[in-house]
Length: 219
Image (cartoon, rainbow, N blue to C red; front, side):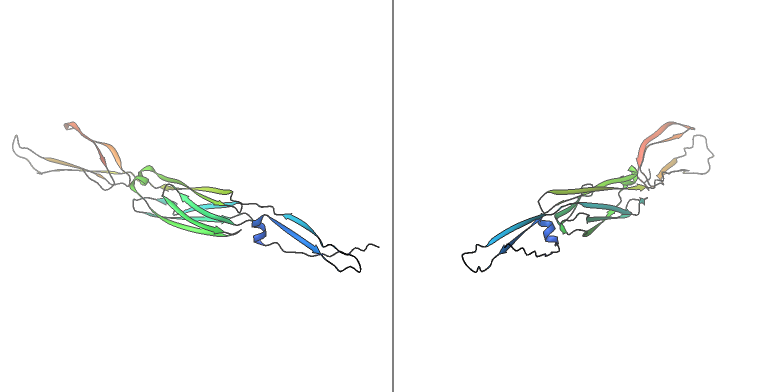
């Protein structure tokens, strides 16, 4: 009479099992017959992983504002493996700053942080802001690409200002025909570049300019 024995066993799936995408398990049964010949038998069970590869990049800047060329802004690039499989060849790229970080390998929930100090240029002050986007790219265990991007904008505090100083080479005159030399100095006293600067003096005909001045410059 046939007799059936049932055995149960369990296994905790490892990260390697998730990365492999499946687990093939083979069981063999052997025995010693009381008579005749018994052929060993086996059977397999295939369990498939539900893989969800995903990566996130978060870009932050401190401070969020700047006012002068030479100011420093600290950028932070945080990359997180937000999926359930290991990611390899994870690289961060920031084209505006010409940055490349990595490659690194990230396990699920793994995180890598990169930093960069940006030195503000006069052009950035004149433009009024710096907008740039960083991207992250990597590969899942099957060689398929995963990616994400994030942007950050920092803003200039612009203070345009112009100074004018006029002086004469003498403070008194007492002779008809005496010549007096006037000196007019224009200074960019703000923090942004100025263009199309024109100087007019109603007492004397003619227009001086147009000229351009960077912050702190005089003409």
